[in-house]
View 1: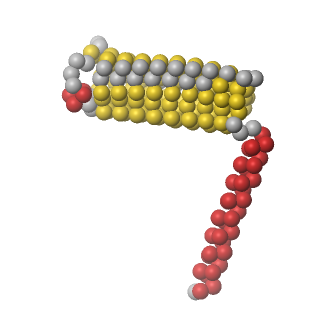
View 2 (view 1 turned 90 degrees about the horizontal axis):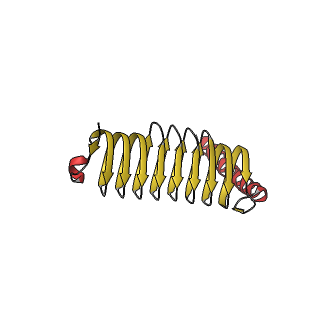
Length: 188
């Protein structure tokens, strides 16, 4: 069964659809098994599978996979794979693999592998990371492959400086807490 939407956004909000196919919609919140949207804006989507083309979403949570083409999202989370073509997202959380072609994300946390081609990522943490022709801020993984034409913002030298700065700040805060407690204990 397929539910085509020809109604206004107010009538669509908070319904659960089996197969949602929509075009030129503005939806605040939607729940669907399989969601395919084109040139739509969605605040929050709770779905099994999601396919977006030329659309924008605040947040998408999927039990399986998410695919995006020429789309953007604030945050996306999927238990399966996430595929993005000429798309971007603020934060990505994936149980499976993440593939980005000509796009990017601020933060990616993946239980599988992450592949970025002609794109960029601020911070990526995954089992395997492969970045070709783009840029990356920080990449952490069991196997990290950075192509020759990739600009890395934080290399090994910068990572040492960041670690030292973090350690110094942590020691200072810990020292202030311990010193403050001693003064408090002395007053009693």
